[in-house]
Image (tube, rainbow, N blue to C red; front, side):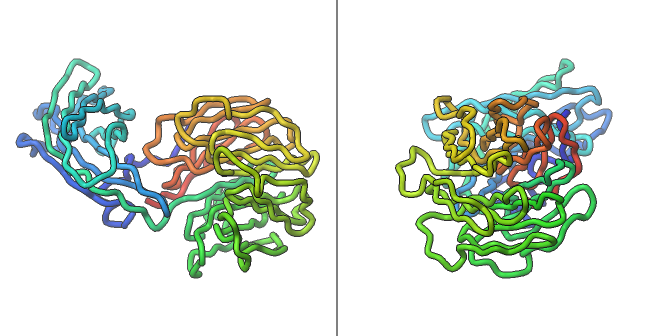
Length: 395
């Protein structure tokens, strides 16, 4: 069963815009708007079409469209479809399942919307699932250039027992679950580069954070063994993995370069070698002290660790963003930015593919039978034996 902290898809968009998590670009209300949500005598209607966009640091965001349906029956299961037109090009819109919101239903779509400063024409048809139907359109909606947000959830890590997890944001804020398990963070200290990774100690009494420049920050029982913060790197750091005895850690860069600290052994890297796609993550084989790298196309590179397969030959709907390995090295899982999960010699317990308007940022394991996914706004999704605790919504 998948759980998440309940919120509207954009949390809401108007609140999001006010907080700086996105940019409210336009709201179109039909002439019939004015009935109160939940009013028994009012007919069902579309109350508004809203657009906004969410981005991540260094990248343009993706535009989102939100349709709000009011006055639907309590047993409604609404759906919506439609088209969006720019000039002479018309593209179908596909909406995510609705999110209830104080008597209204909110449906979101990203397909068909493109970045740019131009008006688009939207036509919507909807059904409440119990016999009621309606339509709105064509309506002109402005979709302006998406800008990057200044803060996002960037990574998730769990302890060796799989009973706790921590999520970290790009500005270095850390939240631990269940309960208050935060041993400190970098949220009030100016950073030279955004935080891109987190690794927990075996007992969960400490953790390390790493920035894109290779700066390492240790908290709790985690010891500092060095960093690349003062080095000039060929490519930014994308992750950190701790050794099984907490006596060291590895940093991995986007070009496949590996940097070892403490008792972390070096078994090789992809640094300086041609890659089809950049490296996006790393996992350790606790049985051999070896490690794996994963590239954005799902390619796996093994170093003193067994090869269990890869997704390099698959046609992916979204790039791979991270990986997680079984404690004994018997298999691993990959996660894509759209929430798709790919398993190799480990059980598949589900995915969130196509269900989240925000990109998935990482995966953490709960032993061999469960795992958590985290999206850019801090929502956490649990699968298999992994318990759900909560998440910190940051946009």
